Image (cartoon, rainbow, N blue to C red; front, side):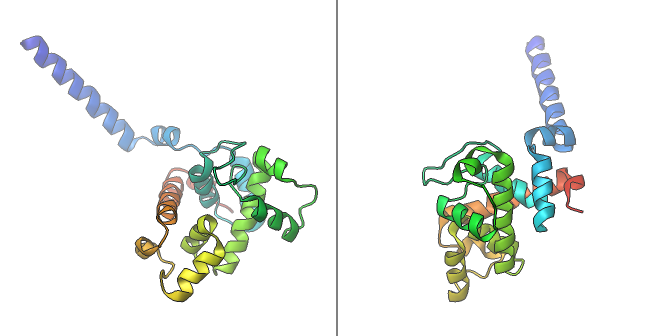
Length: 191
């Protein structure tokens, strides 16, 4: 009976130490919430005046930093752009020699093209990060319609009013990772 009690106490102590490490350890959190391709994200963020934490959060939600991804709907690359959107960005941004194949297979190009698009959305939505994130998922026309019709006011507090469950969940996840990355990687902020 005494051996069982000692084993349980030891087990509880181990669990307590692990919980404490998890809650108080930056290295553990950084291990659980890594940012891959930091230099590419940083360069593209500086190029387009973006918060690199936001770019990283979108990549985390879209592909978890995995390259060569194609979604069920046909979105390509690490930042999961629809092919038509990617073509529009390449044309509008005057990117030379950038193909869908390059966007799909090269992290640096996907991050650059996706960052250009985020900057375009930030301008369109006058810096409203929540509307930008929603538009990245549902499309800017859809989000503009929601906002002009009064369906959603573009605020995080009212994200539950978004008519698409996928977009509602997407915004919540991106903002969760955005806040997590800001806390864990303060040195990553654009300068």
